[in-house]
Amino acid sequence: MKAQEPKAVEDAKHALFIRGQKTNEVIMHVMKDLNMLKKPHSIMFSRKNEIRPFEDVSNIEFLCNKNNAALFAIASHSKKRPQNLVMGRMFNSQLLDMLEFGVEQFAPMTAFKNKLMPGGKPCFIFEGAEFEHEQQFITAKSLILDFFRGETVSRINLAGLDRVCVCSIVDSKLLLRHYTTSYHKAGSRLPRIELVPTGPNLDLVVRRSRFAVSTAMGQALRKPKTTEPKRVKNIARDEVFGDKLGRLHVEKQDLGKIQTRKMKGLKAGKRKREGDGEADE
Image (cartoon, rainbow, N blue to C red; front, side, top):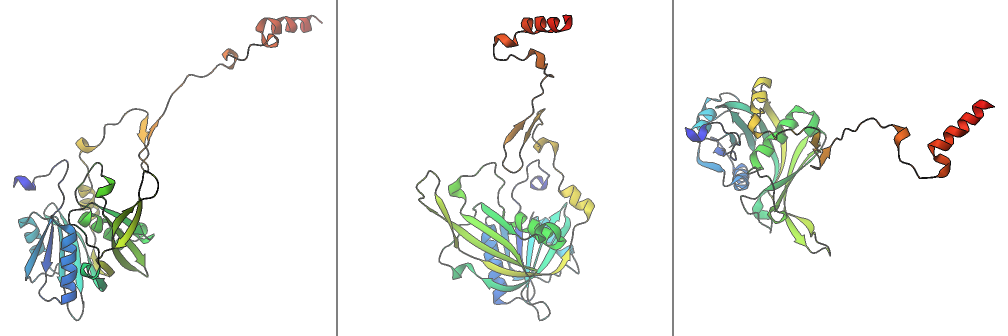
């Protein structure tokens, strides 16, 4: 019970990978590869389970609460929905949202020479305006980040960045491509980085969706005040580059008191005498 209590800084979310009542070899390979990317914060069920989350969410809520998991993925296969993958997440012991994907193309990790080590911190690249404007892809982006971002860290060594996940939208399809990083000498202090395909690669199409209620999403995104940085007056930070920006307040300047170059023609006494002479004329 103590592990399930709310925390100011949450631990990495655990995920359940559940096998449906009917599956095929392709969708099971998808589940195994996604489970490998999520390790060590994942639990994979080998037995078949009669779960239909879009008809009844009670079973998935029970399994997630029992295993203290906030994320889940369900693999199934049928004539109506071949190679089906449902991904979703929980909040406050209840279903928050979920998406159903159809896997149209799949290249497993075993098809690539380079291998990924589990537990690494990935870098994400999202290509496509749909990730900012269409609700199904906004939710898909949030789900992918929640599933595979790993531990929350304040800083990371460049050598620890060994995985890159590129998500693209092409013809209303979500394309996931995974790469590993290869470092080479570049004649400077910083190395030259090349991306080497490593898999798994998936072409996904969104089938069904269940979006979060606005009130529940607002509660899920709420941050405790203890985690917010203490605000310093007149100092802010650039959200893009993280640079510190400051604002200085100065008094109103009197141009008559500005120190200028010392010239005889600019002396106040001489200007005053010249002014008096013009007035006498």
